[in-house]
Length: 389
Image (cartoon, rainbow, N blue to C red; front, side, top):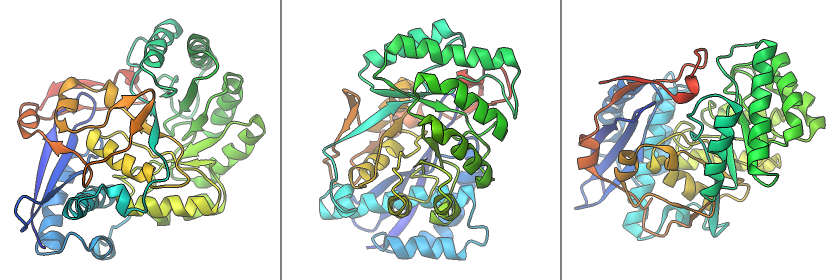
């Protein structure tokens, strides 16, 4: 079996476009679906995928997944790169889709079999309302009514290393209102988007701890794991875990974080970390440190489905992030066989391969948009989209 081509698609969505792909083979009707979404880097990724196809994919056997991955990673001089790793992630998951389809089994069977019968999920992207305690608390109650047992929220406004006292108080008031709205059993994961100085992060963790969040996420920028370790050590007496890792690519970037126990929970992204097998290796490294894995996922339902196959087959999996219920209808319609949430969980994927297909008509009808998020601008949580492309 040989790879004969790589087709790419870009699906417009309000705050980030979605880059989907189809890896074609010389076996009639056999191809793989993948996702290589890079938030706000569409042109670069589409261009890089063209280069990747010519240099590394054509004529190769898509079932030799380790060899293909290593060939790309070894030969790309700037290999610790967002585009290289995310492109690898998208192509690699498409290879697993091909392999699963060729054998007639779901991908999780090939990743070690099932460790669980369903996958617990938490919602993100739900708080695109006015940034007041009342409005966000009311929306939180609606999300809880959808069956979720956990959700994530960034309650902070336009912020850099520090915030003034009124802004700090407003952020705390939002979480207080959300906790009162949803009761004691809902897990509230607090996102900081990696933008605070160490002292600010520690202060806000201490002020928010009484509302018993499930974790504090990415409290400081991602480049300096010693700063992250400082936050974790300060927060540990509060009994609240610190989570991070969505902006770390491949197992190599996790070495120091895990060795120094700079986090309690790791959050690799199946797309950006380099694919399913690479994320599986990261999870195994974390398991050796008794650290659970809660995969990041801000992609389409294709990325969600790939993440589910990882979750099913990973012993130290904790909970899966999803935006799928909070996106536009056409994003859901574009993915045939997309996973559905029932009582806060995804069911076990049963179809061969990943189990999803692309609706190319829907994708063609929704061209890319020019959207973005700017955490230093008031109202960022509404995820701006300013004009069609």
